Length: 203
Image 1 (cartoon, helix red, strand yellow):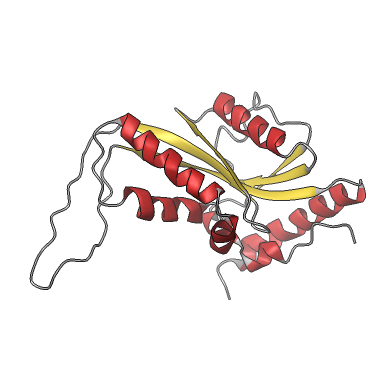
Image 2 (spheres, helix red, strand yellow; image 1 turned 120 degrees about the vertical axis):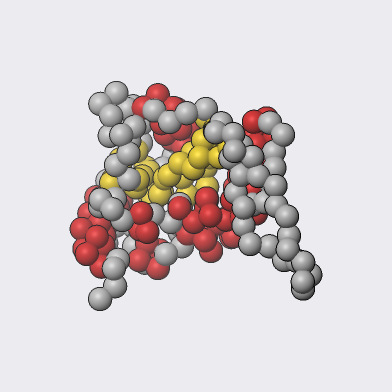
């Protein structure tokens, strides 16, 4: 039996019910999955090519300074929204949700995320055109947004030594812009079949 099946038995019906409920109300529905990634000066050594007989030397810094990328992706069409913010808490999460809501003001957003403390905080502000749904516990593999961070780290951060946090943020911003500008690629990373088979229209 697939390890995905037990958590999917809880999430998928709830997801379908919410999408269909909003669609019956005449709302255009956008299904999105959200996550945060931490990026900083701490080195990220990765495998790399080297000529036979040579051992590559990879630099790395051990400085623990970080910034955070917030992202939400629509697996149906690859549309992605992102912000870089200095920390994660209910206030920055509220800022990100508001930004997504403004970018999709004519749609109702069903936003799926994990139960991080800042996602369920009492002072989190959820926009009127958005409903939050939460992933089952201990099932990060169900969140396609996780794949964004893996690709970003491999393409923009692996085996790279940054001189400063400004350089980190510049690389992060460039990588996020590239992803936002290429929805076809982003859809290929996040378009899990169990998600894209969920209709966004009322039955």
